[in-house]
Image 1: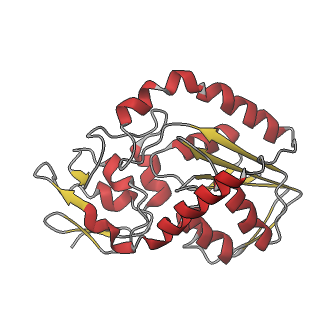
Image 2: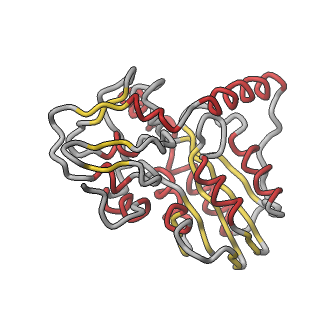
Image 3: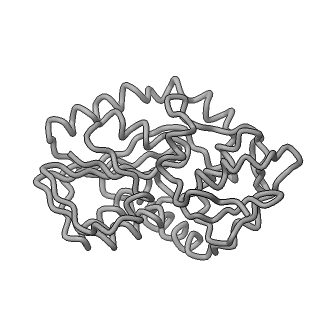
Amino acid sequence: MRLFYFTTTGNCLYIAKNIGGELLSIPQMLKQETTHFKDDVIGFVMPCYGFDVPPIVRKFMKKHTFEADYFFAVMSYGNILAAGLSEFEKLANKSNIKLNYTNGMLMVDNYLPIFKIEDQLAKVPSRKIDEHLKIIVEDIHNKRENSVEKLSVGMKIFSALIHKYNKSLKPTIDNRFSIDDHCNQCSTCAKVCPMNNIVVEIQPKYQHNCTFCLACIHNCPEKAIHLKGERSAARFRNEHIKLKEIITANQTTTANRQ
């Protein structure tokens, strides 16, 4: 089994590690020359971005082809999944992939413009994350069939509005980030960035190729990076995932310093 994943704060890597198989980071795979993958089972694990598929995952799917007897996809989300998995199903269909199993995984939402991390962490016990993840893992290992429920008309309209807003966001959205005096030029932000968008000079400098994944903010050891309008000063990384694992998954160059 091959499992392709995209992670920024560890939620999706935690899901992927529980499912098992050969774990392949999507940012790393985009650097490789291989464009076709074949296995008995192929899976995809990704976060929901604004009721949609992360742009880097879209790029990966459009660039590669896949061949398997059983395909699955799991999408993490922190509030409402809405059209997230439906959009991935559409994307998969364009790549001639018939998904046998899809499911959402409710976890901690790290989207700072809307959510307070403290409030999200307080909800963890009621979300029974490991209990639900165990069910998903068993489903996949037993090659069960499952598909997302059809969206209501209202949710389709709401999702479409959010998608329209997402498309209006420019890569220069990183202008909303600021760096305070706690920065010690450790370059962690550059290492966890899946877009190779950060160069560390005296302070991190953004190159306006941002996908707004917030990996830089949440993984900064000094909490020195801030977002205009952020709802929380707290930061999040999945407790089961180490920083070096996210760096290994996302670092696209050997050095990001000038």
